Length: 165
Image 1 (cartoon, helix red, strand yellow):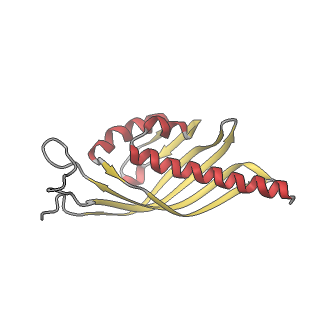
Image 2 (cartoon, one colour):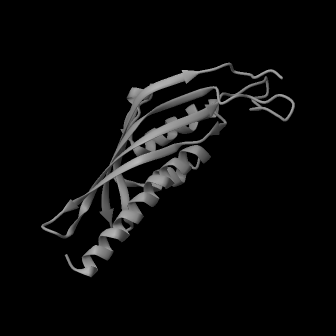
Image 3 (tube, helix red, strand yellow):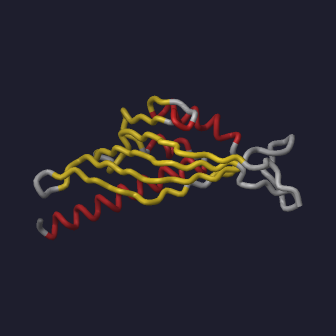
């Protein structure tokens, strides 16, 4: 490989990492237009192992926008990312796969008005799940985009909805 190819590969890896991070931030912040923008036009998402749906990214984003109302506080932690960039005889291709573990603590809605808590009545991170994402990405004219993501939930834990002081 030449230095130019090496640099291109590093730039691809950084760009792909930014897409994966953008995915977590979009879900956590409820930024559904940003979520949809991370996918190719034909992109799909599969949340069935976590009790969700599978389908085109736009439909899944709509489902997420409704479902995540139950969890006003979310924070994905995506770690142990293993990236396999397509190799075309020593040159990077236009496809990549990322396998990454996740842990996702969330707070359920509490109180009659849906307030997730206040200084005198906090909630605990009362729903936590973990597992592994499998991302398939394509290089597009707009940069790297998700062609597909599959959630492989391995575990979940529920705790008390409200923590008393």
